[in-house]
Length: 186
Image (cartoon, rainbow, N blue to C red; front, side):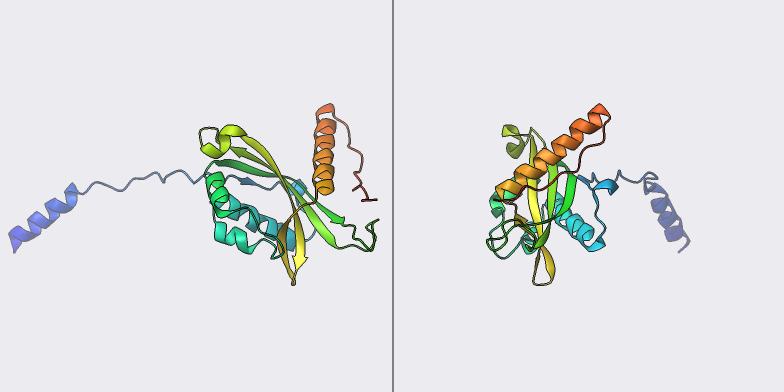
């Protein structure tokens, strides 16, 4: 019995010690600056959940966050794209009222949020070879008492891109940008 104890001790001493330094944390490719957040914490939480699903490549979660009225990006395209994601950065999140057929001036239309994000893709990946920097504009709409993503109409996409560019130009020049107005669809 005494010999077995000695052998057991010697075997334990041959086990390499555990590494004392933890592995580096995984890269977080999703950035949602404080200045782009809105007053409604529910909207901010939804945007975080949606962008995290995109950044993590979780198509099923992404699909559940999309409006039932339209089909989202196809799974194959989504999966090839997320593998190339290096960073997703929210550049704008604005509350707007959309125009409708009954109210072209947008006074009575639904209140939605316009989400503008820059996406940097790895040019070594197939999805990033053609265009490594992309912008995405989506709407955050209320559907059955929950927030959902939806495709933004062209007029909204152009408006928010112009707004972000104006803000970028003003910041570069050290100016305060003018308040942007969503164009009417008249």
